[in-house]
Image 1 (cartoon, rainbow, N blue to C red):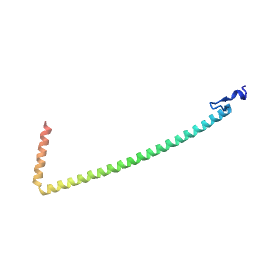
Image 2: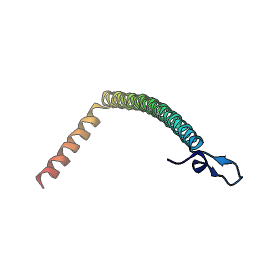
Image 3: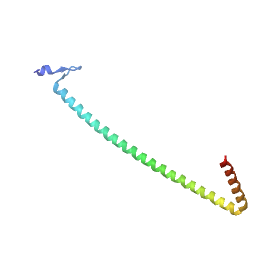
Image 4: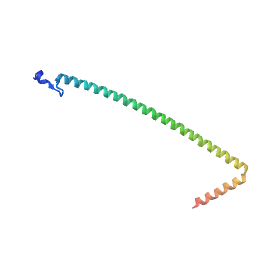
Length: 112
């Protein structure tokens, strides 16, 4: 079994380093590493939660924008329908002629 004199070594600055002081420093390093690992875990969980919340907000915004776009399309379709109905009421013979012409063209195209 080595004696205390044999367990001691000299550091670069000339002070003595013992096995006990090395073990104490290693234990301190282990404790510091455990604290750091815990902090990294907490930071990762926080980042995940933040990213998830931001993504959910983005989905909500996209949903609202798509609903607004669909509402605009519906409004435009309703306006177009109203204009078409008004046009047919104003000039029913012209509308009937156009419908017959389009039907005739579609019949010709379907034969080929």
